[in-house]
Length: 435
Ligand code: SF4
Ligand code: SF4
Image 1: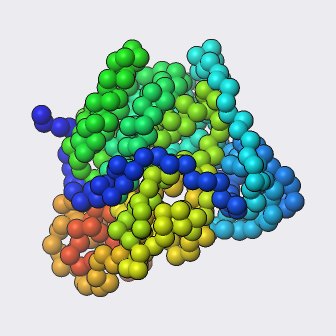
Image 2: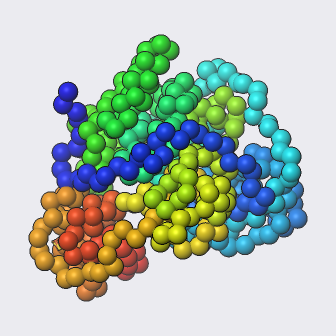
């Protein structure tokens, strides 16, 4: 069978999913202390509404959205706020955070089921907003904003991103295998809001068991969902590449998926929408893959937001002696983290503990053109990088720097090991500043 994929660029890194693929979802015992940051999402950080000494209960709002592109933050535990301080989250941003000491016994306020089908699309959208749901693949764009369809626009396709193309990560895979009914119901919640003409779940072909299971379950429920296996190619989980792979539609530069009649939702966010709609449960926990060659026991954990990476590592048996780096997210787009007290945020799909993997050298560009050949956005990474290096930010922007997805395909293929993505991140920041 010929499998669909995007046409331009991309790479095929070893998927390394065998390390954790068979590890069933396991609930992390509630840590004694959590650090819940107000910068859990793309956009303005939430405004912390608690102070030192306040008691908090599970699911209570402790931070309110500070604008349209922002999201509420809820307490993942019953406990007491023992400190308010600034923390650096995995992306490098510094934000206010509530340090919460957890009570020894925890309540479970999410046992009663609700019939979400009685709610209107506006009420469901409001629920998604109030429950603080964001894109859980790493982008953390507030889901309610994504599902707000402006007057006069129609959604032709709702595409669910079950691709999980980053090496090592298996959190979405485990959700699909262990919670297929819940994931599909969450997809139907999103569909009840966006009212698409068609619904497609895109899944890469290294998860054919998930493709078969979701197809079978969707048919059994009578859901109008097509489950589409896709050829393995990175970065297929990027919205633009996924739209191209599934419905052959191109999102022009500077435009959004909605401009071509598409809404893309992450699969983990659909599961969160299921929990919100059925149990009124806010986004206070998520599945995170803890993996890598240098962690003693890779696992897929359900852990509360605010869990420190050190607690995750300890629960997985600790680091091996050859551990050299800690990466939050996948190895292609994730962030190197230097402090294991960094807390999990809503976008923490993975934590990787890795041995030394590449030589620490970078040489001059040899004009091989590999970066151009593999860039899925059709950019010229070598030229952009050279301009940024010499401070010509406007020239880099004229070459399409703002279209760069920071996917890392160029850096992955560069024989000179140039820090291309770091350069592009810096270039974007400086370019915006100059503007
Ligand atoms: S990081 Fe940017 S320039 Fe490099 S391949 Fe990805 S989109 Fe292209
Ligand atoms: S891949 Fe690296 S060495 Fe080759 S052209 Fe691009 S930047 Fe230069």
